Length: 439
Ligand SMILES: Cc1ncc(COP(=O)(O)O)c(C=O)c1O
Image (tube, rainbow, N blue to C red; front, side):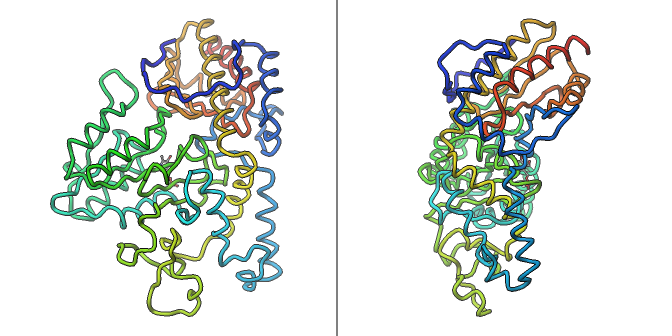
């Protein structure tokens, strides 16, 4: 097995200081010692051949928490029995339902509650935030991102540039990986920021890269961007609920994320937004406005003037989609119970154990796997399958291992610490070994 030569900081903190073994007994022992093991029972697993699947696709769509249904049922019940009165008299009144999410979310991303709001979906929010925070001038107009950013981000950035009459070929600068390397170096990003200097208007990157699972150094990159007078914005789709975030202290200007991956809030569900306190409570900030962003005490006076909320809710446009907020709120109660620190600790161990299992299987078979995820990582490992192809992927899926495939030959394995067990990692290794022998 070829491991990446990256010398990035090792963020992984193994939970158990012992030598790993590729055995069922050992994996079970780790599960017995796992303080979060009981949380697996809080989630509903699909089944294949009558057995719960090994779920590695929490980086795409998180599993459904069992407690979610009660939150949705409550809204359905209030709607049935109260109809329009539910806006003010539901158990959790709908007119300010979204406000309940800010405090628990602020803990997940390291923010002040007033810096958080939940609305719309991720790409929509990135656009809305760029309306406020990408204000190109003749001199300062460039946007910097990582090469091969998630396609929706590329489309969003390019279309923002074209909207301002700029040519993405000229104004969008991508930081490349070095030849032969699968990851981005922080020093290359910082150097590019410094080179662009006073021409740089915005750095907008993914906090964790969707393809290789790399965690970017948000603190250092944000600081570099701000030191040349640019704005730092982050797409945290793969970072939220996965890695440590301290958005307020790191001085990030804005960020947005979806909630259907590690946040387990359900397909296509609402997006969260962070806007640093220094941008709040300003009347002169350019912003697309709607009635849900105006001062709540006057919202129903239907006044012609917009009076922005003092917090991030000023960016709200429409009355909230309560049926999508309910599952998000349910899932946040789980995060509140456990806290990010415990999740990150388990995640480090689980992913290290998965890495070990891959190394062990690699020794037993002819093919070879290359982990292209650098050590600066969350729970995801992206694995290049040399000598194997889609048939192996299809075999794994048919045996109840939910993974995903990315061209040219990469599988992504993201064991979410809330519901994946050490035994899952062991069982995966066994199925992988069998699959390689057969295909
Ligand atoms: C990194 C990243 N950015 C943006 C998106 C797009 O999200 P949405 O469809 O919610 O706008 C995704 C979706 O998976 C993503 O992974």
